[in-house]
Image 1: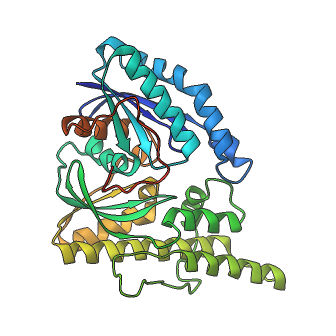
Image 2 (image 1 turned 90 degrees about the vertical axis):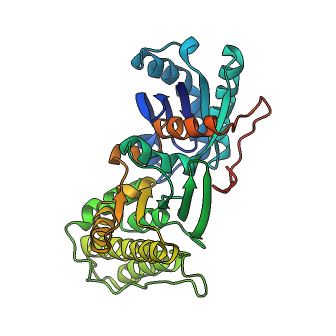
Image 3 (image 1 turned 120 degrees about the vertical axis):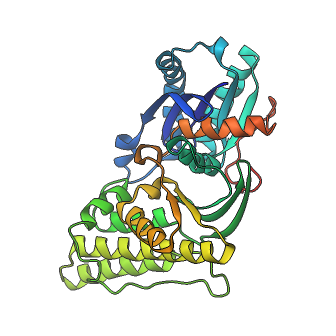
Length: 335
């Protein structure tokens, strides 16, 4: 079956046509250059750009897939979580499209979609497995029990890992999106140059906390600037990357051992981080575990992953009517 998938949860307008796990087309209109002017995503601007791009992008996705709307079996759309104004653009467009062509409407959870990026990259992957979902807004350890059944065993108590990367990178003078630039600059630095905190959440071994680490780095920069002392951007970037990736890797491996998983996957924007991919690969090889990494081009927001997850949501009967509404926050367990 063919699914037309729509993604507009943040600052990427994306439309794809998928047939099961197979991607027939995937089109993305990025807003990065515009938001770069403000140092981060401006929700109002993001919503307006989605409105401007979504119809044309849909036509292009259909053209590239050599498919007509009549040949589409269902419309899948990211309905939650995300920026509410941005989500509403995609949801309302999808509702109108589904109504006009008389096809089923499939609401999809954004984090479930990120996990499904692995299904596109790895045709052999199937649940159950343990997944580290890590991005600018989320850091979760998730048991993927089935294609539409999930259980959170750990999550961040404050900042997400990607937010820590982005905000420390900005403090070092890097442009948006900071995490991407920090990853590149860190390759030229010494990860042991700065002694950074290694935060833990007492009583909750699977939860994360990155706020203190972020604040420590920012205060270190401010202290150097106030004293007129120089600091090494590559060394500090390398130290931040090292500490965040070690925390993510340690907790994931410990959780896998505790809950009996030997199959692990990464998902989300930060799963493109070169150091995280390296460390998880090293530790999984050492433990004899199987690691699945999404193709780097599928780590960021895209509609192909929405289509892949939408396929499984459709098979599970998770459909919506014209009363579907976008939701800014919703657990992956409920989605």
